[in-house]
Length: 153
Image (tube, rainbow, N blue to C red):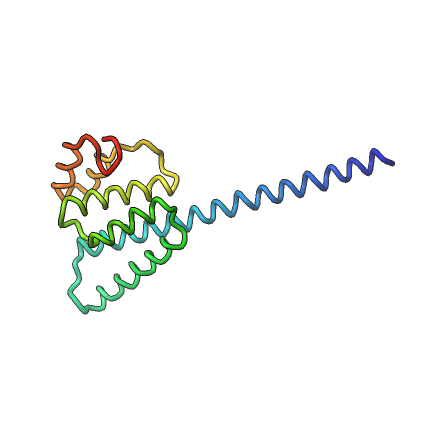
């Protein structure tokens, strides 16, 4: 009788622990997916704005700005501290690629977002800069730095 009771208690405890751990893992996965989607949406909108350059007060620009604001809000909710700090720094400088500092900050922001989304760590910032090679000065900065915004090149 005691053996059966102990076995039953063991099964209940095991099932409960499995439920709690599985639920925790699923919650973490869901948050990571929301975070990654917010980062992707924001970067997609920034790229679209930079390449498409819709006219001021056009319907396309308004829609793009609404989508960008939505992605910003989701980054503020789901982003890691490091990604939000990098994002905030880029926004404070003015979210453009007009200066070297803005480009470096943008690349650092993308790097933080990438690592936060579960990307492999240790990716060279030069390679990230090359993804944005259309801005030749970004590539130039990344190729000639000893440290790039606190990261080793």
